[in-house]
Length: 196
Image (tube, rainbow, N blue to C red; front, top):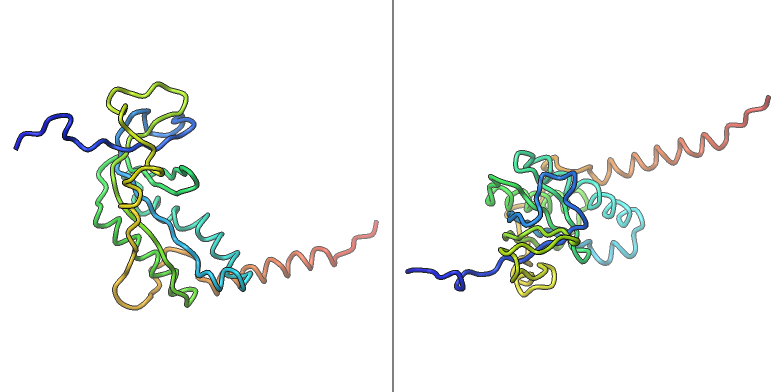
């Protein structure tokens, strides 16, 4: 079967303010991961410690874990319309990436004792800097976060077996102990009165 240029599926785009300081070029095509974990709604609303832990872990550790695991693929976290995407420069093992995403959700369930809902999907996108002209190869590119393909990327992440610790993130109990230690240190510093 012979494909014409018009038969090819157009690649969607991720938009950034600047590509300066990264290893990515304006107009480059990259493997892209969409991965988002949702908190347990009841615990998030009623337990302030879980709320703070979840926000801190998602902000600081989940995506950092992916960066460290796949460092040779030069991952970069990008947010478009408040949705998290990670782009990879080269040689990414999609199966290993998919398994690692499952391991993250499995560990989060293990540490909190709650079931988390997560969505994940892998596609190819073109990276566009907002203030530059769109390259000829990307004229038909739509913003990924508002494209029809976005719905196809929202695959529910399901792991096999019981939740387990995979060593990716800080355990909830260790995080609570550290918060209590920091609060005690702060209270101790305030109690100390120095007279000259």
